Amino acid sequence: MTTKLIKNIDHETIISLSEQVQIQKGQVVSKTLVQNSAISVTVFAFDKDEEIGTHGSTGDAMVTVLEGTGKFTVDGKEYILNQNETLVMPANKPHSVYGQEQFKWLLTVVFPQ
Image (cartoon, rainbow, N blue to C red; front, side):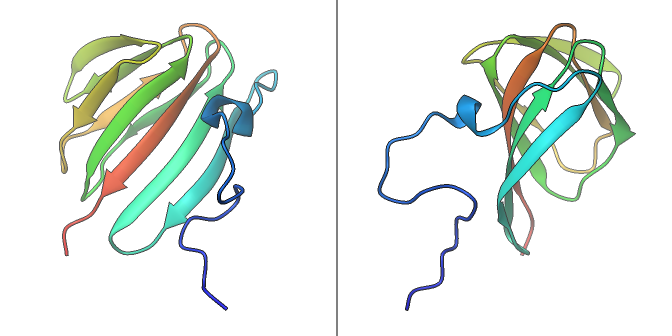
């Protein structure tokens, strides 16, 4: 039997990533699809005014907004991303995420090996 490297979603099935997480009042909801020493892939759903405070990462973090609009702050600079827009947040720079409105997004972090 083959080990699934991508988990928590069906394989060989067309899916909508934004349907994998649901907005919940007053919460940040996440679903991890891949987590290992090389890469992390997670889908998030933020209610309006929810946030992940400033933190760092040893890997480059690529974010893509799936629905709505979110604010990503990297090293003090704010970026407003809308649906289908992507931003790379470089490794070792402090960053945070804020839901200006309800929004869903995909996070892919690639770690140094």
